[in-house]
Image 1: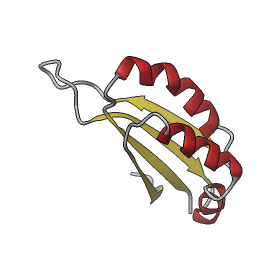
Image 2: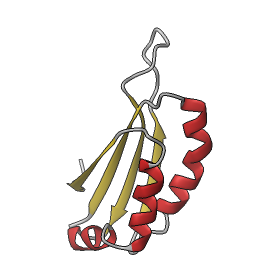
Image 3: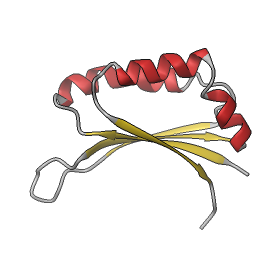
Image 4: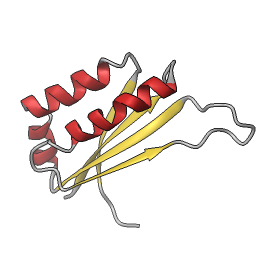
Length: 101
């Protein structure tokens, strides 16, 4: 069954600095083995313009749970998560089965 890893990135203390780093982070994510597709999104602010508690999402699609699980044990994943963690911005990563609506 197709699987995706969703990375939910909290709002950084310095959003402009984070955005400068983000292209490198997304590029590293794209190097995960067996990755089929990546989708990045920036979270809209609240209607009054105030930031939300989350800043970005990054969805990483794989053919199977086994492929996704193996990918996160590789040096490529280590580089990706180290770079993301190095921003100092908290994040959460979730594995999900992809189910068509």
